[in-house]
Length: 308
Ligand code: FDA
Image (cartoon, rainbow, N blue to C red):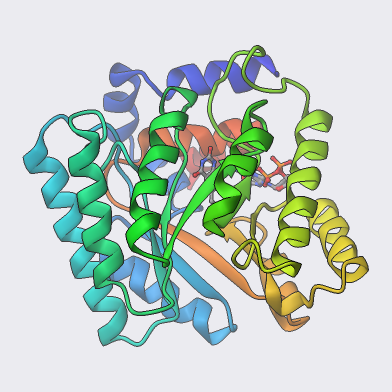
């Protein structure tokens, strides 16, 4: 793992750096590359604009590790408002939530209860996605997913290809005919738990994607979702889908707002269902540091924002 990536991911946990960054207007300008604004309206407007390009969206309020049940309830209530706004504006949008934002640290059963409320409130066929956070939460998040999935079909979970355990986790989840979003993984994990080399992560991603496509074809997985901006990988997955005779409309590619926008439009124009994940909110610091860590060249955007 690159030293810069490790340092940026460590920095993502620094309360001091967070205070410093939030006071700097040039950092806020740089953050705008990945976020249309801090408030929900900005995210809804961005979702509307994406819909004009036949790109669906997923909305997520930034925030993690709440420390009280009242805060977690407020996050649930916020997402209920988001679901109502999506319906009111007739947007092709879903939501994605973080377990630690909905209180898994405080009470896992109550956290599952909050996600059940959201799944029940979402329109039929609109998936409520559960993000996957650092490895300390993997097992608890999968338990959460299994519990909610028992009552609601419209819930999906993210699996991280960099974790050595993920292939076994997928085997464990398959009896649920699960909706899975595969990503590479964005946290700072030790090599005992995660493949440290990019090539290994990419190969594992392709292996998981191939498994999901094959399972989908046999009716044993819901529509697979590939969350990545890695176009070489997306093209390999499209070729594998072709080999397996899985039509392109049967899977989705999800990307982050502000990254690979031209690829998003091109894939959508070619008939691949695409969604863009739009983040908003004031708690952007740890999330933004993870975006910088994914591509340390992004630090140049911060530097350039100094002069704007
Ligand atoms: P990779 O890092 O190899 O990048 C491929 C190419 O994409 C790069 O060469 C560059 O061109 C471009 N790119 C990638 N990241 C960029 C950036 N930050 N800025 C500019 N260009 C960039 N992770 C997690 O641990 N838990 C989760 O729940 C989620 N959820 C999630 C949802 C969705 C929809 C997406 C797209 C991603 C996530 N992630 C995530 C993040 C994921 O784990 C991963 O860190 C990023 O997607 C970056 O990896 P890529 O697959 O894009 O490949």
